Image (cartoon, rainbow, N blue to C red; front, side, top):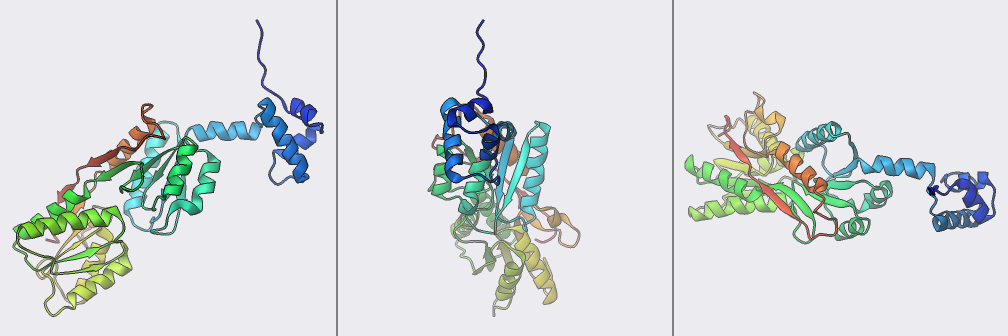
Length: 330
């Protein structure tokens, strides 16, 4: 029976008319070799189908690698996602590579590195996905899943909590507790998490004939949330209740209230969104909307693992229901 042998470095050397050591140097990025000679060797290797040992090793590793692109690891919600994702992948014998980007930035800065590592899939959390990055991943047959956000302008898979319904649940709770002067501290205006939570909250208030009494932006982070809370509490007629677009801003608001002698919940009711670990601490006991993080991670991985979903498809959005967690801040 005839056997088919894989092309060897010796065959590449013969085809390119160079030494065997030159072939080795050509596949080592930092090795000294004339650019034209490297180019000739790589062309010869491609022509006969030779794959270097380093590249074969990298491709084997990449087969089991998921790349997570995160833009706000200072927010405790995302380390929780990271921990769950890492454990789920470890259970299935796969690896996780993390690219941490500046908060609220897009992923273009990491595109070349991500594509070069040839991961099996990419999960994007709090970073902004651009059409350029989405297009590049399709061209390289790499699946992409947005986690905890939706971008309608890009055909991409997404898994998110139903932020709109969560906003409605918060508004309904505050109305049922008798509040009418209700404030809102948003996050980053151009994100789906902010937009959908704000939309649901505003609409349920409007249905009851109530408008948002005062609002500000806290950028989804502690310091800005603290300043936004101070602004609302300094009003001549401050709100009696404030919905914060995430927990870290809600905790900042509670801290700011205490410093001003404002009692939570007697003088001010506070509601957050996410249910980060600190929300349940005795110092805060924050009422919040719990995101179904474990189910979100599970759904993201199912989109990646489903062989019927291709990187070139239009994209599937899976919206999961959050749950209102009642504690002492309302």
